[in-house]
Image (cartoon, rainbow, N blue to C red; front, side, top):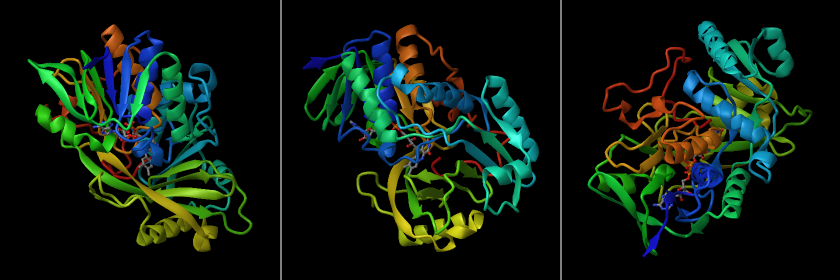
Length: 393
Ligand SMILES: Cc1cc2nc3c(=O)[nH]c(=O)nc-3n(C[C@H](O)[C@H](O)[C@H](O)COP(=O)(O)OP(=O)(O)OC[C@H]3O[C@@H](n4cnc5c(N)ncnc54)[C@H](O)[C@@H]3O)c2cc1C
């Protein structure tokens, strides 16, 4: 039988970030257990947009705290997270201009570099783009995208250097709890006793939560993306874009291609038996949506695509909490397809909570697990007309 001060379940961006930040805070006997390999879950498939624009302050704060890490990754963590600050544009439909201004105002108050741009400025940021149906747009010059695998590997490498044990190919089969306290985990390789367990198992959370009597209404979803080679004459290394008019997002991929994701609606799937490829119908939808903005992409060559599994929470926002009914059990659950960019801050906050008794970097109250039982699921009054989208971004 082994023991640890903290066991972390899951080697995605969030589990690796927790491991790194615990080690930085001086916790030495930390074990991260990953059933497959680092980045095997949503992280490895992520579009990895790094943008600050949300329709609520709490997520913008997590994203902004995380941006500080992405921007200065070699110094803060070590290694390279592949961050590319190509800038970010948020497009909203007509009728939502006021909500956009309010959100941008909130973000500026936090310290985020962002502003609403005029139609003329937008046309300069996105030349050759058809913007006729856009109501308003916001611009973030410091945002962009990162390499999700590189980020995770770098967090893990830095954690290892600080003494964290990272075991891959090690599945946690059960969380041990007694008398309202966590006691460790059972794994395929034996038991590990620990007074603190952090769950970051992505779409695979269900089998660990159910035996504890925990049901937060989480549902695994299969999410797809497609890549299109830039058509003849298209050379613009464009910014990352979230398009709330067409429920899609895009960013450059490699030297001469664009990666796009489009909302598909409910797409429940078994995370242990899902198709990792992209569907032909989805490719057609992506090409059509891309061409709606950039007409030149109407005949663009498809160059690939893939699918990954995310875990949706009932209100489309993550749960980040110490589970009240099982003391010592901390969790990052229901990533809802948006929790790569926030992983640096999520890991830091959870580590602070474990070590100092409360998160210091950001307020995690809005992410509490009890909000559903309280009948107060998350709602943003300044949203852009559609919440709980299953599109990842
Ligand atoms: C196609 C796609 C595009 C996306 N685009 C964006 C984006 O642009 N921006 C953004 O911020 N987010 C995006 N996301 C979402 C983002 O990738 C996820 O929210 C984030 O990576 C979740 O990280 P995680 O560490 O919480 O979970 P995961 O990366 O899913 O990691 C969970 C890990 O836990 C392991 N595990 C599970 N159960 C066990 C067990 N019992 N024992 C041991 N190990 C276990 C799994 O094998 C897995 O490696 C996207 C996701 C997808 C799929």
